[in-house]
Length: 205
Image (cartoon, rainbow, N blue to C red):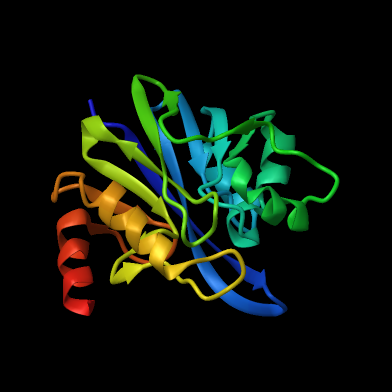
């Protein structure tokens, strides 16, 4: 049976390099009817808790350390006791939002997060940030791409700790090797697929 996937959309401010930007974020809840993980606890933990319902929250996974993807993680963890996971290369971004708190465990390439009977494999995809990661549910043909890959192309670069060349390398070498039919659930906006975005990147190059 495929994993249960729910989306909660929250709104708030993304802050970096002295700029503030209003954004809508996709918060993905992945699991089954008994337990769940949250991918990118953004802005407001209350609607996320509502989406979880009476299920056990096993982990709060942060695809990267930008504040709009982690700023509800602390409150959500405090309410549920669930650990927060982040790639250590984004420690400096985490420290901006949580200067007096550490995340609980690390994401690394090749590790996996398990929930119910489902396994989400961690793919390290630096570029949008040094510690950017995607989560792949191979059995279901689904990828949670954070801000690495969007409907329309790569995530934003040009700000601190980001690199266009590196994000394109991450996408082409790590993500475009997945089956074309793989559904890509993004950090912002609509979902897409690996096949569609491979064509988009070729068209833009």
